[in-house]
Length: 487
Image 1 (cartoon, one colour):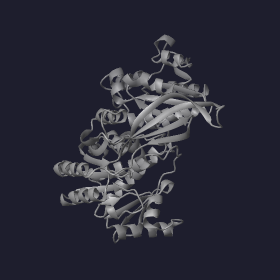
Image 2: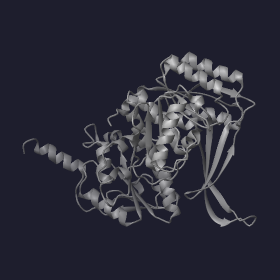
Image 3: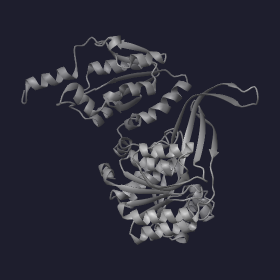
């Protein structure tokens, strides 16, 4: 599969759907309540992110697309409505298609997590259908702006936004202007989506809508073919969890897309990621099968995260590149490392972290990393990105690009996880991971180690690893330059 991810920057996507706020309360459990046989969760931090159609938006923005969103939410004066608009505007999203209804609440889902376990979810929402007036306003917005977009994505969570009349008008508008319209469906009947380019149900949704119990491959294929025939859509892309996906097209055999084996932490938001990446792949010029395979790879990444977290372009690129010894599995974005670090701490594991450029790996680097690993259970290595190396070492550096350096360090058995960072972000990375031990070579002093105060404040310590060899990447590079070509 050869898809140029840099094309994503030129894609303009319209997302229409049920916007939600996903709130996460992260805590620790140390006792059972004396009032009832339930856990007492001591909250240590809370976060709020975009959920539902907002998570589709979040994924698109993270991958570089220009996004506009249309929906109906509660009035901006409410805490949830105001937060929704702020979260979207912070992403640079066009929100002119959002209608604020003072009689409507903005959906909010609160998840309480202790350690790495999902304890409970609390939903505050309304499923009342939007008014005909608001439906007309949404249709007028879409008709006026539809030629500004490459693809239209519809995220239906069954919260009352999509009446049958609204869906018919949206699909007709897309078809009239020859625009691809992809729908993530909801409900027991999918006939309201007739005329769409494609729908992306999961296996359970497909089973209910087709009225066929899926128990094996034969019943799965029967359900997919029935949906394709009955609904009058061009394609059905059924997501099947750890089994990947299967694409149904008129006049063709079902096309399976296997999933890579990954550790699954949280499946919430995977369908949003599939919709976003499928649409973005199509908008960038990929064939439907290639775009579906891309979406499958993205879903495989996102289920390894906690909560509705988007997939980054770097993660997607690494997933598409051939794996050498499984090393890409070690390469994580910071958003992935935070829940991983929390899980490791909950399991009583000690985390060691070190950082550097690692341009031209040499014996000093290997000894630093090996010694660092011996000091704890898990070693996380943070590597300067190319711009950071250039700023630190000069315009002719790095000699080896960031992706190659990530791959080389990942190949070392003593390294458990690798992440890429900008020098300006190092203290943020250290604060997010909160290592028990931060190591550097003995060419530093404890006082000059960046991030020392952060580590010590959270109960950790800085350790300097003795480096006796007089070797460095800069010295090796200078020696090569002095010898010149042909020597």
